Length: 118
Figure 1 (cartoon, rainbow, N blue to C red):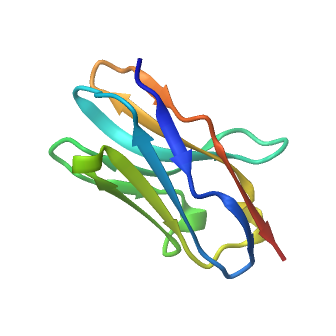
Figure 2 (tube, one colour):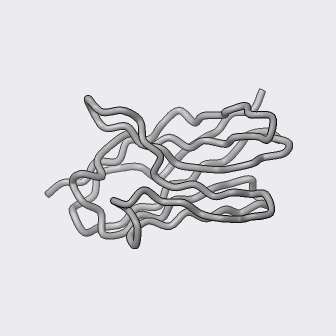
């Protein structure tokens, strides 16, 4: 059974940086997209950034993180990263990685807490 294992969360002051990592512990065939979502207390889970693995190889970011966050991947390591710079208190949330395969199956990580203090 494939598991996504996240790391890199923590507590940081506003203006600081963190890099999240997510590695698949098995093989996921035909990955379509890799992405990061977040959920703050009392709010719905939202897509933060995604990377399309198939031919378009496009990236997508929620407006609130554009210019500050960067999604990337290491295909050899089956790992996706989220580099987060200029962090703000409103970025505080649990961050989840997600792999979506072409048949439409979703794989989720367990979540990693990111807390940004003002």
